[in-house]
Length: 283
Image (cartoon, rainbow, N blue to C red):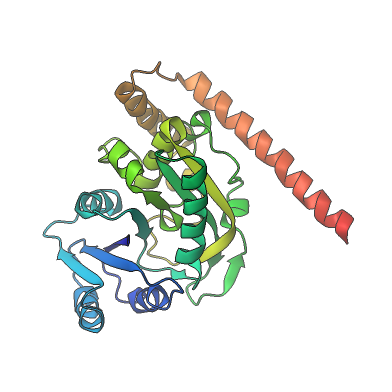
């Protein structure tokens, strides 16, 4: 069984489309755990209507406080007892093979790496408010590659988008909770799996990643949402230091963070140029 964790907040405009895409998946062996983050619009009423349609597959929790996405997902993680967990945003649209494709890759990795924490993630298609394509590949759009899966990379950057993620129970047992210092739940999970488990990437798009004016996190880079490069480096260092403290590792200094960042961007650039060159040669 799969638990899909969905955190909602004032999502009345797009939540219907997302729920429809979930319940038209080719794999329907899941339960949808929803925590509403104290919405003040009609989100709860919409969720209750869907609960009537699928009473055995939907469980709704009404939050009394607004915790934000990271803490809301953290709360839902404590409720899950399933073998596999997926994360879901309220305003996207899942392609109908998302669950099946991700679960198949998870099973492949579990066969290769039994008893290890495993995280599987995919690429996304960036779309506008009306689901018209903006960028076929989200990762190409933010100048990253799904091939980056080392601890060094995750200490200074992230290519794992939470709404594409599936983790197994071993991963949840390893992480158990997301600390306050962590920047986001997906990045924190990736950090742990890069150290003590395995990360698998499926190089296809499984989600229409909707971009609109109310996005809390979106396809524009994290840097543009922070006041300065200095603030950005400080935020990464806070996350890295928290992780290193938990695992009794040597902390990263600012020079190392900048060096790692430059290294991975150059590495991505080489991969990108190679990919483009192969496409040109095939024509």
